[in-house]
Length: 84
Image (cartoon, helix red, strand yellow):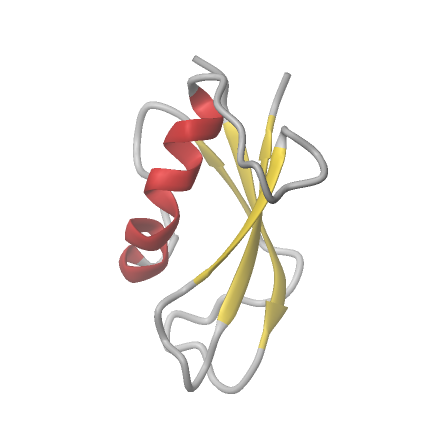
């Protein structure tokens, strides 16, 4: 199983948790401390695919995918990168 880095690459509006561009979290066997639960639940399926060697047909790099939190009024976008 690979670890995945979740990096905030865009934040618009007001993030209630306080995520800002540049924040990074390592997704391994446990939920990263300090990450928004709603954002984590949105990215978990994508991170799991990356952790176990999968890839996404729409992604130009098989080790990378972007995921947005579910708050459509204050979206935070994360870049998920498989650590190889």
